[in-house]
Image 1 (cartoon, rainbow, N blue to C red):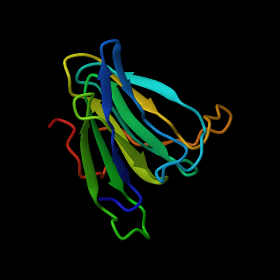
Image 2: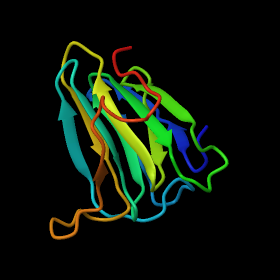
Image 3: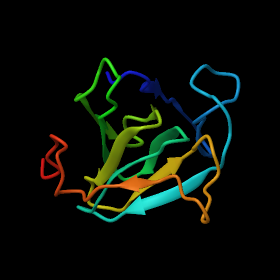
Length: 148
């Protein structure tokens, strides 16, 4: 596992009215601080990658459809430099993945319906000074193949 990445298995609690799933609580170790909560989606077969943040950590989960989340550690001083982590996340295998700052990440919808992703970053988005640094999903030096 890439240094600083944490995975929390999530539990869906069903009853006769529907389902409930806690995603992130302020009283657990995976939580650092609250920035905002947002939803992003990808249509079947679409890849949204690669980017990293210098100031914030992300907390990703998928609440509908299925996503392949990939992480790449390019941090020069990291003991896991060069490592790739790969997760399949869906309501059938729910988990929350903490992505530390400076770790490249992206996801691909690998279901036949739109993947709906919830992210809880540790900082709010700033349109004036966005904390996003991007690479092309396919033309880069990251040893990862989105076609799988």
